[in-house]
Image (cartoon, rainbow, N blue to C red; front, side, top):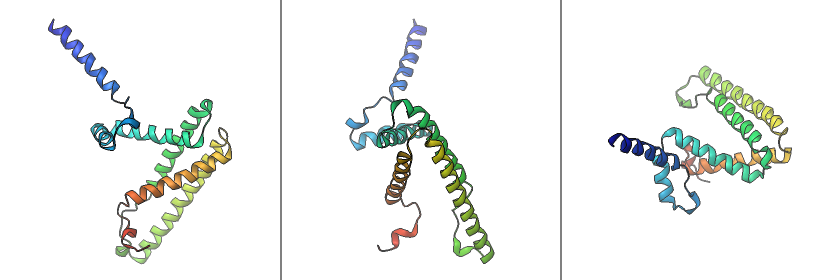
Length: 166
């Protein structure tokens, strides 16, 4: 009897865990959403944010249902590629502490990484146009810029721009 109860308890526990991602986010107040997100593991949180981002992009671009999976794969590949390129530049340094030669090298490295990011964006824009019209690709890049601006407004993470008057 104990084994049966234990087994049912384990199955019930997995069932509750599986339902964890089936929240009705629109009906939750911000405090509830924050509590749920904070209770997730880092992997679950990353997966949830990726899902939210992808859904937002799909809705904003009005992607045909038949093209959503292929576009999502390309878009996620593009984002991962951009992230990998950005990781090649360590922006965590104080320019005032660099010698002239070190500053020149760092500046050159930033230009090279910027060019790789641009080249990568062009490459994936071509790939995306195989699935969606170029107008939607352009809209995607506009939306990316707006999202980046919003994120920087909410969390300037070390930017010295906050002390500057607008």
